[in-house]
Amino acid sequence: MKKQLFSVILGAGLLVAGGQVLADEAEEVISTKAELYDTTRLMEEVEYELTVDKIDKAILQDQYATERLKEAKAAIEDGDIESIDQLIKESQANTNQADADLTEAKSTDDDNDPEEVEEIENTLADRLEERIEELTALLEREDLPEQAKINISYVIEKLDNLKERAEQREELQAMLASGEITKEEYKSEMKKLAEKYKEEAKKDKEEALEREEERKEEVEEREEERQEEALEREEEGKEEAAEREKERQEKAKEREEEHREEARERKEEGREKAEEREEEHKDDEDNDNEEADED
Image 1 (cartoon, helix red, strand yellow):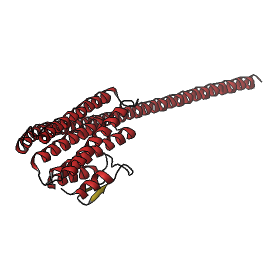
Image 2: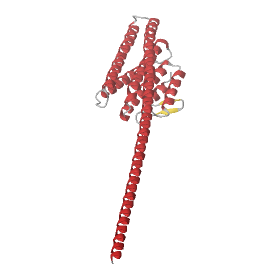
Image 3: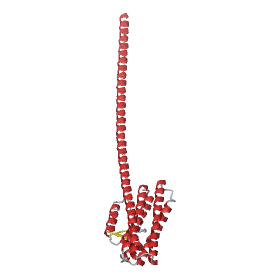
Image 4: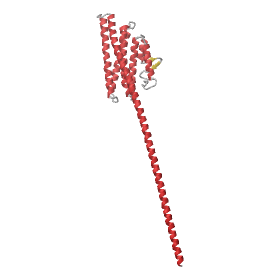
């Protein structure tokens, strides 16, 4: 385990993943909706798997927990309520894994400087307290749905439980220091705790992955529903437009027929008037002829 890695990651707040530096709190957090987000998460997984030292693994998981919480807070500001629960749950799962890795390191690794390990353990404990405080502050926000607050409260409770692990480790260390147990007994008991914590961390990760799959399915379902509704609205719009066009054509046809009827009526009236005038004209001629005959 390299103290330089500890200083870089915990001190500076930077994570080098596959050659890419992820920003600390002073820089912009990558949005969960960004195209590169899935890539950065994959790079985290690769980096963790390639890391051998358990202390280094614990440091990385702690950093991932911090990143997830930053992303959750950014999601709140962006109004992305759907991602908040998942990110907070993942942050808790990373914290759990960090603690499990730390416990396993203390049960198996004799190469690490005890003072340095204690320093790292204290730093991780401080980070845990900070995350609990940040999550507690989120509960005061009025723009969070009630269900989100319930989930945050659940995560806070889970994080609080991690403090008991530190007490168990301290108890074993005190027993070792006082001579109540041997070094081998200490490592054996610590290993039992590590196995227990690893199982809990594994369960947390599986639950987070299951929830993420459920969330993705829900998003896909909503998107399908949105598209179906859009198609229905488009189809309804076309039908309404077709009906309006049909009504327009029928009205135009009715108006045209009315115009033709009016034209026929005017023509008939003109013909009748012409016949009347012709009849009057003939009557006038007949009268004139009669008068001429009399003369």
